[in-house]
Image 1 (cartoon, rainbow, N blue to C red):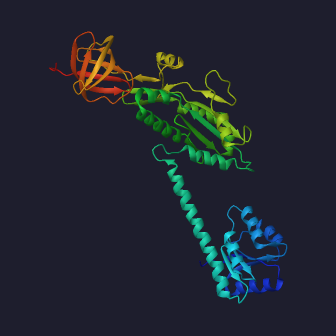
Image 2 (tube, rainbow, N blue to C red):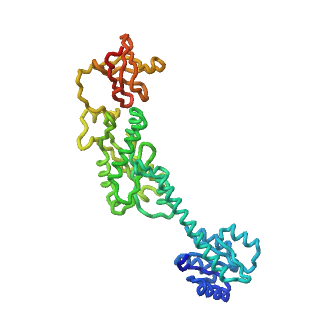
Length: 411
């Protein structure tokens, strides 16, 4: 280390204090502050940071071990402490290291090179440890960052809220909670991967409407949380949430399916609403149907892209039915609405899956199975009660709905 070291020397012997401080200032190249008591040390620590503390073991009523404990409790990142003692016993040295002292130097036959080496070595080790902690924290933050969605995971958000609401924290900030109940329906109807794709698409849209400094992350599988730490935004947080709600209410396309999301958004303020992270999230959660909202909550009106949903789709959503609709397609043949039992025969008849035939044309059909599974590219379809078994090719699959085309010439 080439820079000067800011050193506090604490010793209740004025003569030795003057001797050591002059020695370190002249030959060690250090900026030395002389302190004759622990009281002077704590008064100075509150005003001036030090790179290292050189402390006598015997400080009158208290020894250096108890003083060091107070220093470590007082500061979040305390400087390293090197102990000076006239006794030089091995037992005292062991106590010093167990109490967190960085090094130990005996006053007997004191050599300036040894003293300077102990102080500089303590500072070097402390800065190396600080750098290692910073790298570890950066790595941990990357691990807690979802590169796919560009948002933090739930553990990181909980940790940040804990930092923001630590004892004595008086900062004013807002917690916005966004719940998307439709994601559960998408996972059930279209499969888990489709639900994940939709969550990623929504997260990307959310990122586009955040301001610099806002911290956003996941909240379970069906929600997101945003910490807003901008004084200007907090003056009109309701307007901010309204704009966010309008921007995020929209439709998304997944293959042949259109999913209409109507996110529920709520907000809570610290410290007005609460002073604990979990309490703020609970207060900000929008109330579900039939429950009284404890904070401002918004029920979004669904739109698709820049246009409104068709009245039938809106009525379906309001009735609590699926938010998923099939994309409109042009058909070459007239489709017959039917409801017939059928069986999917895979690998001959080694695997048989019950299904219903919903639509039927001369060239194909739309099937619905009881639960989602990945249908093979080609299989046999037996329609119960007709004696007909046809070879079919899978043309599309949206969750439990499967579109098939009859193989021409196959029995």
